[in-house]
View 1 (tube, rainbow, N blue to C red):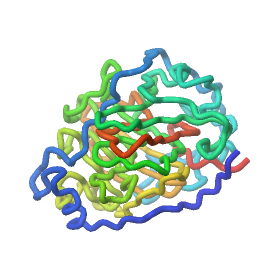
View 2: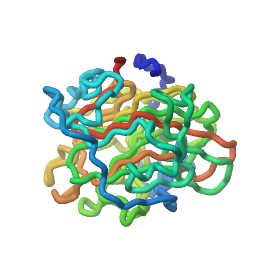
View 3: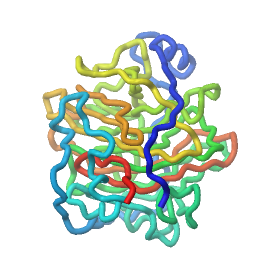
View 4: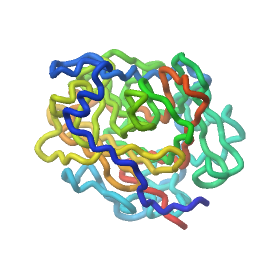
Length: 368
């Protein structure tokens, strides 16, 4: 198994409000008025290669492994971090799928080829989704990982795998390991991480360009945004989001320092407890543990929340979020993706491994 020490090696991008506003001029309206497009294109999973449409498989018998950190009950600034989560109870992730808080786990070791992915990813397997075999640098743990390929082309393409959540939930944590190819050089429209959503996908198809209104849908994606070729690849980590107060019909971007794109001159409505953090650009050619939390708000209250961790470090925390106005709008799907509007630079890849979805904080894998 690969080494699982989690010293975060990052390139830090400190972006002031004015500097960031200037950086996106030409990518959308950023003059202080409500804009329509930050330069990001809609999240669109493309045409499914396979779609089993089946019921999610059981993660295994429930195991009660002791006390848990419940992020929903913790005040802002006090979210769990590091080895405070489920993974610490399962060194090397052994048996993690049987934990009573875990709803899904996949280490990609069971597949003979990418054609088998729909046995577990029952909400769709899209385009160039394959299995990396033989271990090596492109596998985090074990001998296999998930590989998405971005061919050299100037047209849009979406690679992805997705899973339904049943029964639907109000809170979900999603952890995955991922690595950008050292050749990764995509800018502009791109979705390249993991996401959680509520009824954004209808009949297996995305619904881009239709704003969230509190009753129809919401979506978040933890990903990198690189608006211009001159910006450092793969771009700044952020939350791409459809929510009832979104500024663009194509969705907004929340950055750890508090910027909201489009119109970064307008502060985000994250409430008085929001803590700005430094924007981060991860390295290409390196494995990281990513974790995403979505806590849907109580209808009528602004107690929704998003958390984003990198190698167990909380790098972004967005409280005071309104996702919904009705209690029946609940989380029904999560997935991984590599979408791009254009890739003229050459063939590149992104790898994923050791995915866990759970009701509480997971944390990075710990050494056995």
